[in-house]
Image 1: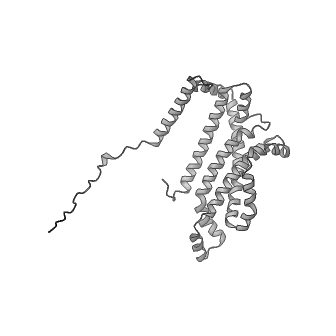
Image 2: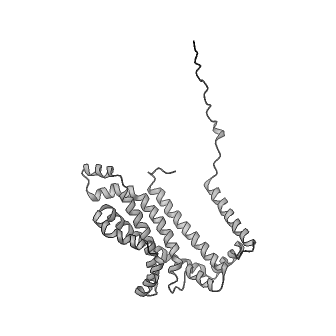
Image 3: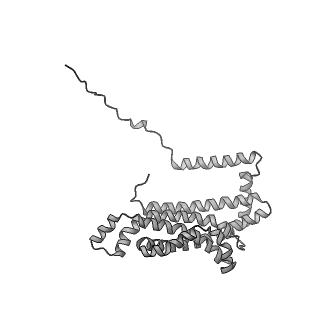
Length: 267
């Protein structure tokens, strides 16, 4: 007679005190920043032609004290906010129309794809000829960068809405505007917000080139002027300011994304 012995071993539950420690996100961010500054400082000590962080900090203090940096920030922020706002404001409704109505998509999408292959910077000469050298061409180039990024994300968001939800709403008697408001817009909002974040990054990336157009103020203009005099600390101040401003605005959009799409499961 063969006896079969059951495996009665029971895995003991992990004690509460044995959990793997989790380092707060803020601490990791601070460690990353300190490490980045440390690498920068180390590179400046190796003989590379890079100003040390202290030199850049002193130059930033000088620019703040004489009011130059504040005026440049305001000029660049105004251009980015207007161009980005116009780009997103136009991209979202056009993206919805393209995604909802197939004929509209067939008419507009080839032009969107056509202009996506042309860098906004390549349109600067045309913008100068058609719009002059005032603020309009600068804002137009930033607008185009934000628009092209956001319209594709909105279109993709509308196209990926679950057809089952739309059909269920139709069966219940909902009309197009109700389906758009109650089903399509909430379901596609994560795509729209991602498109806005990409468009914001494109706007800041285009800013420096946009301020090539006869600007008298702005972070891009200041960096280009510093280039003529090999003023590396001023160039670094401009780069860091653009990076910090872009990061802060991205965090605002990320916060809005978390609030508006709190229903979505994320990692």
